[in-house]
Image (cartoon, rainbow, N blue to C red; front, side, top):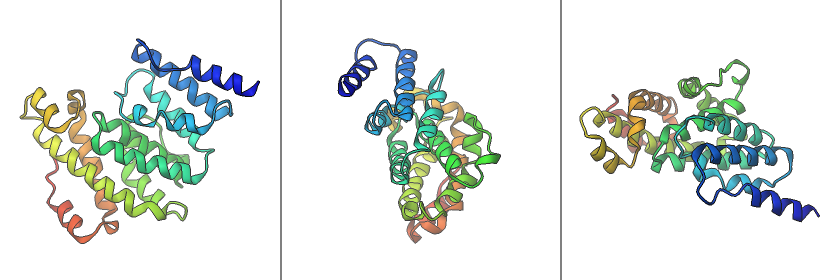
Length: 221
């Protein structure tokens, strides 16, 4: 009976077929809440990762990110660490990198000592990143992945800064083609680049010497 109920839930919440973005968000939100309540296993949440961290953050998608982080708060720390590492990986190639970075900000804030003081809105979680991510990576249960995270952050920062510095002069089509970043991200490109660079500078001690030198030479808009 339990297996039949699980299979039925998975079937009902399938994302295949011709459904709109709002409908996809609703189904994913329902899935995440079911995982949180124990109605679906955490493996169902894993299947959503590459999609939800590379989607344009509009409509219900912010609520989806909030719910995922709330669900991860009851998961094992190894699961949360894997999500953080994968979010950085996705940001390095994402069409919507600001979504992955906002998730990183949310997850960092929810797990660090500053959590009671934080405002959880899309802009604040980015602005707080130079504070929350270093705090998270300095804690005992997260320090084992600090170097990997900061190495990936450096790659993301290099990519975003290069894109942001050319976004004001390049045509929309050529910019998206060369960087694989959606043109809608351009409006906030400078702010995103500055926040990421500032965060990377704060964490530079985790970087090898060549990347520290590279960080010093990155052009920030």
